[in-house]
Structure formats: C-alpha cells, structure tokens
Amino acid sequence: MKKKSKCRELVIPLKGNRTFLAMKYLIILLVAFNLNGFSVVKAQQIAEYEVENANLKACIKKVEQLTGKGFLYNGNELERVGRVTLHLKDVGLDDLLTRILQGSGYTYELVNGVIAIVRMKDVPQREVEQERLKGRVLDAYGNALPGVTVLIKGTNMGVVTDTAGRFTLAVPKEREIVLAFSFVGMEKQEIKIVDFQREINVVMREKAGELEEVVITGYGETTKRKAAGSVAVLTKDAFENKIPTSVDDILQGLVAGVAVKATSGRPGESSKIRIRGINTIQGDAEPLWVIDGVPLQDDLPEIDTDQIKSGNLNQIFVNGVAGINPSDIENVTILKDAAAAAIYGSRAAGGVIVVTTKQGRPGKMRVNYSMSLTMGLKPQRDANLMNSREKLAWEQELWDEFSADAFAASAPHVAVVGITGMVRANKLGRDGKLWTDEGFEAMSAAEQEAYLNDLASHSTDWFDELFRNSFEMNHHLSLSGGDQKYTYYFSMGYASQEGLVRKTDYDRYNLNLKLHMMPSPKITIDATVKVSRLVSGSYSGSVDPFSYAYFANPYERPYNEDGSYRADMTYQNLSAINDGNISTDLLPSNGFNVLREIDETSGKNDKMTTSGSLNLRYNITS
Image (cartoon, rainbow, N blue to C red; front, side, top):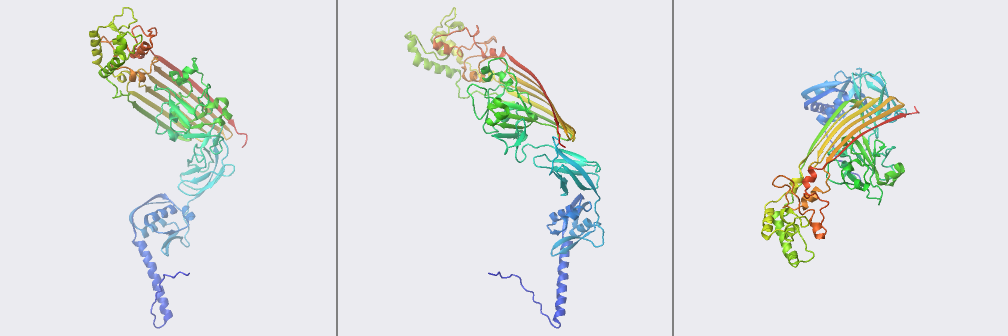
C-alpha cells in the first residue's frame, strides 16, 4: 500500500507572462529563505565562549555543544589547522564564527539549515608546521611490543607500532606535546615530548587485573582463562578501605573457599588460613607463601609443632609473612587446588598464596605517606550476669536443695557449688585455709554468715580488671620513580599495636628497596632487599583471660586490703573438691591470682629478618 504524502503544494496565481512571473517568485522565496537562515545565525547569542590553544575542529565542536546547531566540516583537515585562543562573553554566533575562522583560510555557509565550514577560494590554508617523531615501545623485559596505540593527547592523530615496536608520527611543531601509549594488558602511559629530533624509547608495564586478570604463579605469569586449576586474584584496590596489621588479615572475607580465622586476640598473631578446608589428617595444612617469586621456608622454633599450631604467641613466626607490610602489596594470587602441586610439589598441598609487592614507575619521584590510628574498646561485662549477692543466694539455694541433707547425714560425697558450698561443707575454714591445709579450723555458723555477707558487699568486674582500651597506629612512607631505563621503589613502615589484654603488645619495623634497571634493550636487572623486625610481648600464663573474666565469680577480689594479691578460692579448687582428689601441688603457696600471673610473668619474642634477591635477564633475540 502506498503512503499518502503529507506535503502540500504552494499554488501561486499567475497572470500575464506566467513563466516570467514564476521565476520571479522563486528567486524571491530562495532569497527570503537564506536571509531568514542567516538572520537566525546573527541573532543567536552565546553567553560565554573560551578555548585555549585549540585547533579548528575542537573550536567548532564546542560551538556545537553550546548552540545545538548542526555543522558540516572535514574533521581531518580542521584538526591540522592553526591554534585558537579566545575568551568572549555575550557574543553573537555570526561574530563568534568569524573570529574563530579569521585568517584560517576557511569560512562558513548555511546549507539547508546546516552550517558548513568550507575552504575559501584562492586563500592559502594556515596549517601548523609538522615534524616526524620516531620511537620504539618495549615491555619490562626488553621485548618489542607491536600494535601499541600512540596518540597525541587531546586529538585522534596517532599511529600503531610495527612488529619491531617502532613508530613514526607526524606531530605539530610546538614547544611540547604529550603522547599517550595504550595496549591491552599494559598500564597506559603519557610522556611529554620536548625534543622532537631525539628518538624516544618507551617501556610499558604489565597491569594485573586488566581484562583477563593476570595470574602470577611465582614461576611465571598467565591469565585466568589459560590457568590450569582454580585461582583467585586480589589487586591493591581490594585493600584500600582496610587497615590490616598483617598480610593474612587482608584476605579475610575476600576470596571464596579461603577461610581466615584468628587463633586468639593477641596482637601480631597470625591467623589460621585454610584453602578449601583441611585436606590432611596428620600433615601440615598451612598454605605455602610465595613473596615476589621466592617461596618462604622459615624455620620453626624448636618446640613441639602441635604446641605451635595450637594458637600460642609463637604462631607469628610460623608462616614468615608477618614481616611484610600490607601497604607494600601490589596484588595477591591464590592457587586453590592440586594444580599448584605441579609447580611447588608437596609443599603446595595446602594451597599457595603468591604475593607481589609494589615497584617503581617511570616519572618524577612520587612520595606517599599514610597513617592510620585505631582505637579498640575493651569488652564489657554482660549485664545479665549475676552480681555477688545474687550469685551467693543462688549457691545457697542449691546447697539447701541438693547438699544440706547429705552433709548432715555425713554422706561420703557432697556436691559443692561455689564459695557457699565450700564454707557450708567445711572445705574452707578460718584464715582462708582449705581443709587439707595444716592447722585447718572450720568456721562457726556465725563466722560463716559474716564471711558470706562480706563477700556479698562487693562485686568485681573482671572484664575491667583484665582488659584495657587498645590503641594501634600504622605509618608507611614510600618513594618511587625513575625513567625509561631504571625505576626504584623504597618504603619503610612502622606498626604498633596494644592488645586488649593487659601487658600484650606488638611492634613491626619494615624496610623495602626494589630496583629495576635496563641498561640496554637486551639486559634487565632486578634487585630487591627486605629488612624486617618483629617484637611482641605477652604474659606467660595459661589461663584464657576472656574465659576467666566471664566465668570467675564476682565475689572474688583481686587484692587484699593491704594491696597484696588475693587468692581465688573457687576457680581452681571447685572441680578438684567435687572430684574428691584435691591437690594444691600445682598452685602457688599463696593461692591462684590471675592478675599476679599477668603482672609477674612475661614472654618476649624478637625476630630480625633480612632477605635479598638479584635477577639478571639477557634477551638473546633482538
């Protein structure tokens, strides 16, 4: 079916010589149409227009954005013409176009409502003088990079490198220009060019996580698609909002199949990491750590391995990564399955964690300083826990219901609950002596009531006694830079962490230096030096402070009236009394006191580590 035209015919009555009159009317209409179009161009006002050192193409594009008008022009020609600097306010479109095109050899015309930029007849075009710039693009290993895009920044003028990594580009003859280099899997680079006669050499660095994430196995690099086995890659962006004290802490909650569990709350202690669960019964389930291609093989302290893995303070020396500053990490690759064993053998049975640290970038020296301050609040006592009076009343109820009759009947075994049961069953006598102590005398009924009432008059908050508000600070300073032939990265860090438990602390000192040198396109030298020192302190007691604070009786007191340590009569004695074989051989002569264990015992670990590596590569191909 044909569509009906919506156009209407314009019928003009003609008299006399119809042909002559028709031509006259047509000329009048055409002139009126063009005058109307030019009147619109003249009438339109632009509030403000500003460009600086821009070519004609950029100038016209900005006019398009400000006016919404359609323009017709040859972009390749206008891009090579002149540089314009203008700053005008309240200017008409006609005047603006005249100012932009003045002296350029171009003018504008209105064609069917579109403004066309055309070359003026017999007027030479003002073009920018050009020079030929030559250069070569290489990777970090000195290999030529073909297919690299080289663009003059701010334009679409550019070329692509050939199979030898070389390029030749016609550039405007100016004081300076900026070239932008881009390639898949490489970091984009911008280089300022001042000397156009000298051939330039550009070294592009690989970028982890670009498109297909780069998987660094320690012995080589590949992509996730080509990697055999299950891998996970974490870049430094994943760590930006975290303030970790140790490397293993930054992995917590970031990778599927990787469980990170804190073995205790002591500062500086390594977390327990399991990749895809525990895959051994008697062997070591710890993952293998590889730092900058070097597997870590720290010697364990000469104590029982089970004791080390149980979660004591020596755990910070087991995996060898405690001396690495998390702020120096560039990316982390985790090899999860048995495919890692093909690279590292049986050491990789628990998985492999490959850590790559930062290195320098060409350019001016970059100085970065970061500091973090963290305050930790001590745990608070549960409001639902009984106070001293409530606990003693509950113990009395249990004695009356389950033990009083048996004690009156001189039964061979009487259940004893709390200090009330010890007093009623004559297990605790005058002067705080147990019934097995020499010179034991049982309390009278009045003495028992007075003793229990005195205990009920005070409630001890053991959380407040054993814990404190902690303070942690981290400082990190790095300097990096270099040029196309060498780069450097130097960093130093300090971390200090106070534990929530009294008398626990941790300090870490770091120095890191990485040099990358390429004295010739065929020779590459990498040198690394790392120095770290770890100092940690804690008490040597075996009692878990949190468990003690939660389960210790509130009527027990930490100190006597004279300030000496007061023995806890129930925490260590009740189980032995109820088992019927009480023994005080393992307890101090003046009884057990948890604060004395913390204050008068200590454990200190001090470890100094220095490592270095030198890597020399020679490319036998040109």
